[in-house]
Image (cartoon, rainbow, N blue to C red):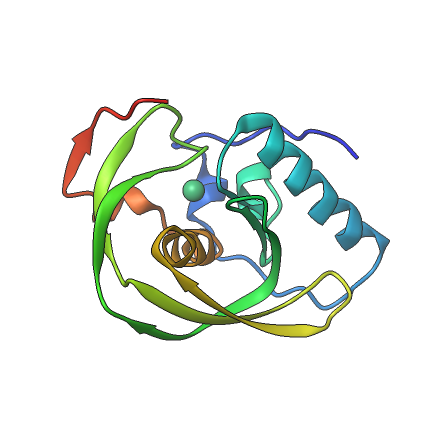
Length: 152
Ligand code: ZN
């Protein structure tokens, strides 16, 4: 396992659409492990593969010590609305108010290729959308209504 370098805003890699994972091999296992290790080292809630320069549809999320690995994630359904502060490890130290759905149903494979369905609310719903958007080269800044100071 290794902590990888997190790409910052302005790097082209963050604007690219990632390719689906087709091989569930040792290389994917290593990527997922490294994403978790890099996430834990930086104290964020989620991290997507393009943020470490890998253009594959892989992301990890950990909120309240509940690690979730997303391989080839697909949003199934969204409902409701929430407004709150959101940040990104590729845009360090900056938080913006973003309105997103309150509930998100998503399906994704794990590192072994097994499909799982997840229902996320509040922060988890926000993370599902934020990380899935990274895989399509989109960042949350386009949704920010107002930039705010957040106590760390
Ligand atoms: Zn992000």
